[in-house]
Length: 237
Image (cartoon, rainbow, N blue to C red; front, side, top):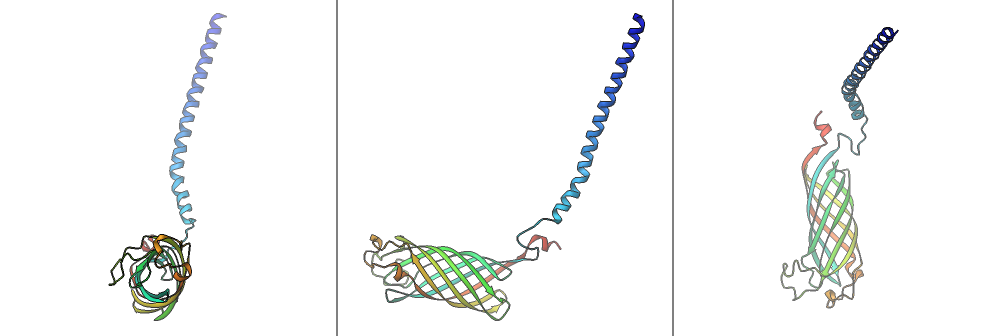
């Protein structure tokens, strides 16, 4: 009886060992198959995802770099003067511009001022010889009285750090294409100024006000377009 029990125990252990080995081998095989399946299936999933990726701009959208020096003519406290400035940014499909802009007083003899901010512009029919655009400027400005009477254009040119104000300036411009990457433009805008501290010591001599800083501007400039490029998807076609 003892021999029979010993033989039964041996066979039972042998069977369990065999089953454990088979289970272990099965588990190993499953793990290997899982990784192989993952490696084979991942590129297919990635390809499907790439085909269904949604982007803000289509693959054939054209981007251009725009820079434009400009001169503004306006009247402050009944005195006509000029401001020199610029704007620049990214032009999308030759139609929609987003960028930065700034300017500083050049010949205004009573009030010295400047500003810096952002610009958005929409160009209508840019392929036509003559076309127009509409724009809006949102900027932060500063003004300070002259320390000494202005005698030349560059006197106190950068001495504008005084009391601050905010600018909202919508405008409309007419453009003439001189070349495919160069155009001449001129237009009119209206500057709304707010937030200027009219009691600040910086303007204690000129006593300039928000209303006096606001008003019509006549603008002229040259628009330079360069570095035209399409999105990477389109360039690889």
